[in-house]
Amino acid sequence: MKNQTKPLILGSALTRLELTKWAGTGLLIAATTVRALNLGHGLDVVLSFLGVACWLAVGVLIKDKPLAVVNGFSVVILTYGLMRI
Image (cartoon, rainbow, N blue to C red; front, top):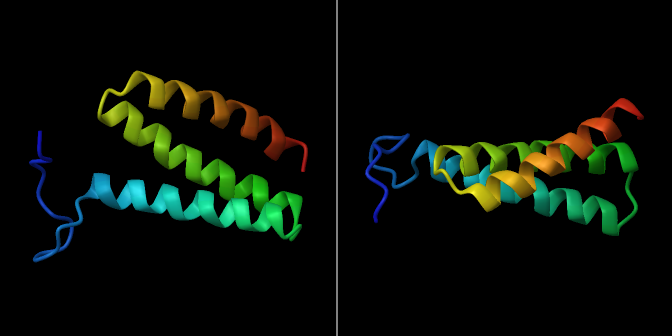
């Protein structure tokens, strides 16, 4: 089923949902890069938290239970990590 929501920007194919997906993806790629290059644990946790929070929102909005569960669990664990920084 094709996404029937209005584009976020006139003339653009990006909807808010798609923008959230891309933001979450970009944040998780950035977090993975930070982790692999050992650029800082705190930055890794923050970027990971923001990325999985985006994907949690997507999972909830599209009612995808596995996507919501894995990212919900990750948000909880990363929240604990944020409190320990």
